[in-house]
Image 1 (cartoon, rainbow, N blue to C red):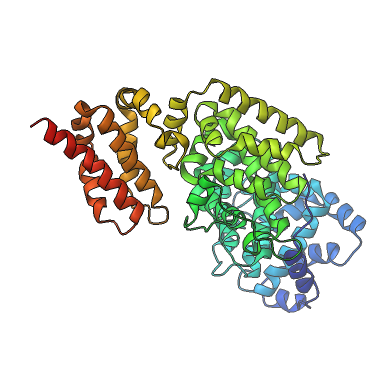
Image 2 (image 1 turned 90 degrees about the horizontal axis):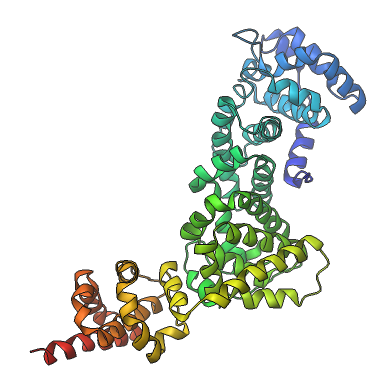
Length: 484
């Protein structure tokens, strides 16, 4: 999958190419050697065909030029010229051109025992995302590591060491407010995620790699990165605030959104291993459902549907209930009504719809309630206010899986939920119903700290929380008086 280089990077390279470099002075100063200069001049400012032929005829010499000799031989030109930023920048741009034009050079550099050693110190110099040397270094490293991920999918110690360092640097670009730098990061990630090993390392370092991407997606979905409106993902109340042509919520460029979704789609190839983690840590099912609701282009819709299918089909037991909770089946019917032309999208949409339909056919109201509690985020779904549901299922809720659901309710209500107080009100409602229907089990709830926490919530500023906590405490008091 080939993507055009970001405009930001092309502009930077053109600017550096246009700068005159006093090469002869660099030789006289001992910054570079006469032989290194000869190799540079042979491929600088010449036709692409001639450059490619020159490099491939002298592959060993160019490998030594950029990486140094094996086993402590000649130094790389990048190491030799480390004190001359102008020379290093120019050499990095030239190297980028050579790597782009000569696959043989890419493979030749990968044969070196320390392919990445001259580059990693240059990444460490970064003090801001805009610095040219780390930025250009990252593009060369990305080309080399992306190639190694296809020629050596299991990786080697050198690539296992280099990838996390490159991921960390790219994450600084992904966190930037400049969409051009963000796009460089995301397109770099996409180029790198071609092997299972590179995806495993990406996931292992998710606090660095995935968090900035989720932040971009949350902004595009109309919720804040801090989670302020996470409740709106579950209640489906987030709305599109599409701005100028080519942008979506929060000023997110549609092309950037596409590239971020492309990375998440590539990552979803490991869906069975990471699906539960993505949902537990990032609420990925409600997030992607909301993005699908807002998706303005068929190409973004295709990536969203395919990613959802990869994740859900790999983790049906946990993620099918989560998908049902955010009303994904109804949304898929809506998407199916759009004029779709992409055969892959239609195939994945059909497969995902059938998967969800089969799930909903077999789900009881108890199953739906249990799935909602397990999700850790409650909304006023029908069971909470249904007296028949509580009369039929209260005892089962208390006894199911050794009291797992009450324990989960205790975990949920222990949090402050500053941005979604209705969750607290719902837990109070549910606990009150349990006490009402199975009063002899109220000590089980007390041992979990539920009574104490609900009594604390009687002083909560939110009116709905105060009301539901009073009702729940009232059930406790009623049975306390009746048993005296």
